[in-house]
Length: 280
Image 1 (cartoon, rainbow, N blue to C red):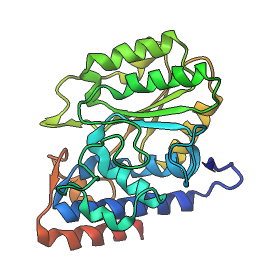
Image 2 (image 1 turned 90 degrees about the vertical axis):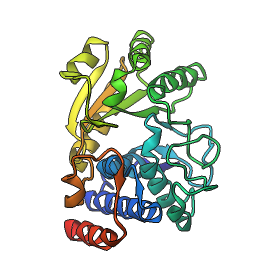
Image 3 (image 1 turned 45 degrees about the vertical axis):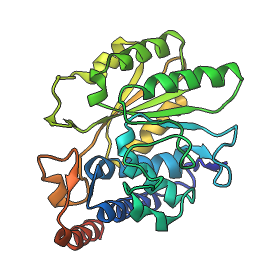
Image 4 (image 1 turned 135 degrees about the horizontal axis):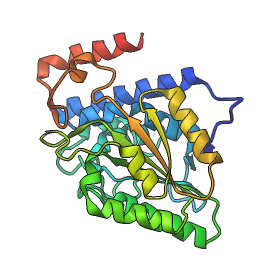
């Protein structure tokens, strides 16, 4: 299984380069369609780098290996980020990336289980990922498996009652093989969050979870959160990540409407240059 890097082999330069490559992969996808959920994907590049190239145990040759860790992406419309990392680990060919969102392409704008290796759940309707992850955590525990369950959810999904039902169940059943990551980027479809969620960390503690709050665009803090989650026992774990939509490309970071981004044809070269300059 891979990667589960030890502290001795951990290289932040390696993780930084992987995050940068994921952003490149996302631009290839969005340029093919001219639009997409690019802001959220760019904001989670560091998270996906640390998850897939440092923490998550999986078999590059067998996406269905029984002893793999499970990763559920509740925000199915963030698929642009998942396709970027699945191409990077070899589950899908990179030359498929420009077909993102195209008719008949398996790289849908929202995830569909069974069409792409490495996709554990169908996304789209929000608020279901945490419940699925809780069920998976309980199932693995009943099997006596040492595999862990990771789930990404979002601040907008906290307005879904099913999220809090799952949070209650996870605490009641002491699912300490479950690690959740909350993407707090402050946006939803029509702009800023409709319903205030703060103090969000205190809410999760009140529901019986152990909570770790970080800058979700900091590789160092993400690695620290993974180490904390490994060492914490007895409760489900929630990592609250503060992320920046469009991270890594200044003109996209500055956009007020960042939920679904459309880019004019003559802007793609400028955006690509900005990304490379940011990472220079």
